[in-house]
View 1: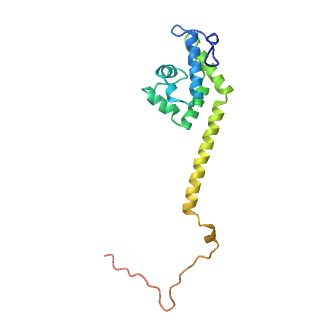
View 2 (view 1 turned 180 degrees about the horizontal axis):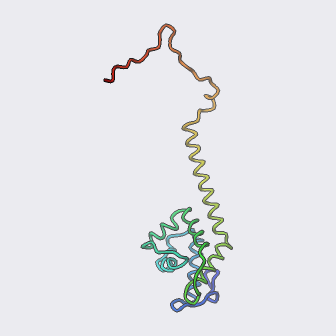
View 3 (view 1 turned 180 degrees about the vertical axis):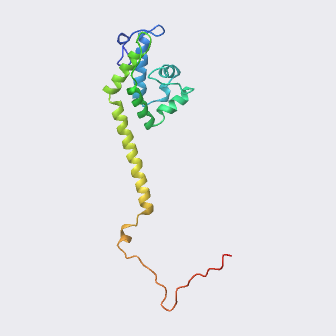
Length: 170
């Protein structure tokens, strides 16, 4: 029983990878998204294959790759958009292009991008509202004080305004 929607019969073997390897990568990719990008699932073997797929370039090491693409909600949305934009070049006998296309279909079918964009928008709104409350508490006049007339102090009648004296600048 496969641990995901992809079966080895869905893919073409390459010289260096079996169809089962391709299916396992595709299923691992979807499990990784479903886990909400759990670092424990970002294994060395998964990173090695992912860094060679979907036009990714390794970021020197697994940690930097993870930080770049999965460390925040905004980065995750960027990753999903990047994944969906990639045209999946190559012949399945030589590349993982068939798996890449299958992953793209599943991302669309499962509405991952829409779900993550909604979460990002909700997160941004919550941040904006918290900032608004903070700024209003700092700068807004309380309701009871708004209705009062501003009090101005006039100089006493018996005193003339004091004019500043400026000495010579030279």
